[in-house]
Length: 416
Image: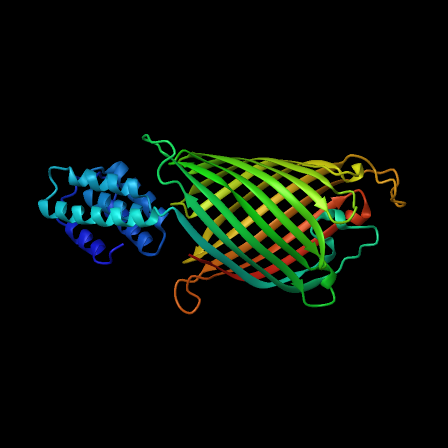
């Protein structure tokens, strides 16, 4: 956006006379709050507040113009143009303001064209430290054996990913509610390296995902991803997974309803009996409020973990809840809780400790974290994230009954 255009537009709007305010609403106070939100980078919260003002006072044209600027910053170009034209077509709008709007529309079109480039890329990096009270669990719970002993460890964790988006030249459906089509691809490298004698528990993952996404403005979005993961555990190849991940999200104002599925073919390097198809089906609800600075979510998932060895084949349900809240400027806190109950198909007849007992267990996970975005200084555009994750697994078999605490702190950033 042209740095001169924005202040010129704001100064020009001062000459517009607002409609009579309702007694029950203080539009000036809300307007000041919205301007502060927008100035501090809370664009979506500012949009919601401007929309609230206009729902009560549709004649406040200055608020309408500032809403257009917020839409512009959020890259909602259609909405920005719509608000500008409402002011332009108002017979009470002075000619000087119309001239300013005309200039701003030209800038809007230029920015929309730049954003509308068919391809874009981004890089995400994260690096930090961790400490783990029970490192020998491995990438899946099935790696636990009767000889396993609780072992703590600490080390380094790092992740880097490259994302590429290719967009269609125009709406997929050209009507009042166009559907935008794009293709998203991402390559990811993840590493969890222990600094002590626990190198046999090092974990590395190479991942690739690709697939289309469709978005209908304010109504729904859908995606279909193909996911490929190569996992290394203890420095050796562990498994090769291929997954299909369709999802569909309905949008009702500040509420989103997610339907998801993940079907994964798992091929393990060793003959562990774990080879098979794992399926997950989920239904989740997320609600945003307080000018979209807060959110709560909850949902249900059903898991079917297929395996060649029937004593490793399990079915179970998962319930999860979570949320995030603002803590201070640039920071937010989040909490996630989940409980999964699993029943295994049959007993492990090779287990001399429990030769006739099938596993029956429940797992409770809780994650508490804080993330802070730096807006100035040497770490500008970086985020500092710290979290504590606790896992409690209750099982009828002693070797699968355990606790685990993982503390992690990392710095992360997106590069566009």
